[in-house]
Length: 448
Ligand code: PLP
Image (cartoon, rainbow, N blue to C red; front, side, top):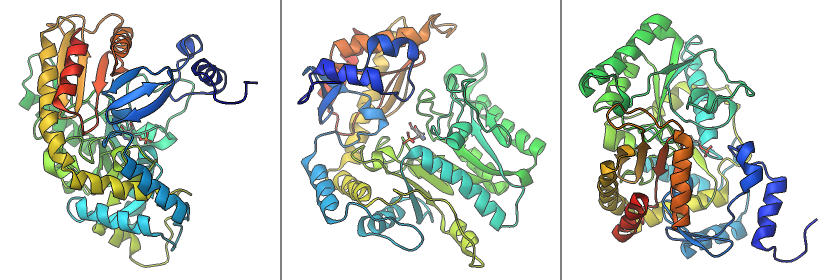
């Protein structure tokens, strides 16, 4: 259907438009606008098929933490693909990169989180964590303790179960089905949109009381796990009120509810730490789900890291099967990419860079709050969002907020900058290697 040989950019665009269904396709605009064809990446920059350069402040999709085009990453991947491109890790088989990465993650994770189950990405890690809750509680003789608690505006993935745990506005459409029974959603802990006249401390008390009320109503004997992104990412870079996560964790401990920190975005340096739970929020979760920065986007990989305590309960008594697992779990090439990513972050001091430049990034972008359109710039380090509003005092959204944010992203793109429109927000999560002059470019371009 297309001419042989190297396709022209226009042909690629056309192939895609005619044959691909993209994640989160808008059928209204896709047919008309087609897709942007990205051809190459190096450091924080992307080039499209026509040769235009963009500074990628989106970081792929919260994931290209090392920046692109690294020869050492490509070499590690190529070497492993040549040595052993694939071997499954079912039942009792393993491979070197998978075993080494599991041990490395155990050494970096907080507390006694020494057990690792690999998945293909974040959704499948969350999916498996939900099953782990059921499995663990059942092994403890608590077969009724199956309900799951999460928050409004959370995003935990796109499989049936992970998307049912999450609840971002706009994601739930009537054409799909979601698991409703046994999943509860608490209020979004967004201090910017707390009730008028309520202090941040009182707002935190309200959120904590809401969880306690839910437990009293449903029964602690029915609630098995609480899922929380330490900072809600695509729900709007929501940094919860001070002390909130720690208090929610304490409630979980009191009621034997597993605390699952979904660190798919916040781990591996985005906030200047390996994991945010303990270092930023003083919480030692029972389970951490991660993906994205784990391989810096060079290979698809996710992991569920969980405690020795959970392992011991599940393993007690012997003959019992954890019948959950994916063909590509522990994929040797993906795990080799994970090991190399961690080695580079360690050797090049990228956590420290993310901390230093990340603080500058947030501070520099907060200068945009002077603009009439900008209600708030919030986030932490290399995880930032600009909330656009129609009225700064009332915080009233723009009448057509989603289109306005898309217009801002499109205008930035025309000036060589990628920022991501989500609803009425513009969201950013650049690579950890971003420099201060590049941060200045982001801020100046957005201001224009
Ligand atoms: N959890 C969080 C917090 C995420 O932000 C995402 C993706 O953005 C996921 C889970 C799903 O990860 P994946 O797209 O790799 O399945």
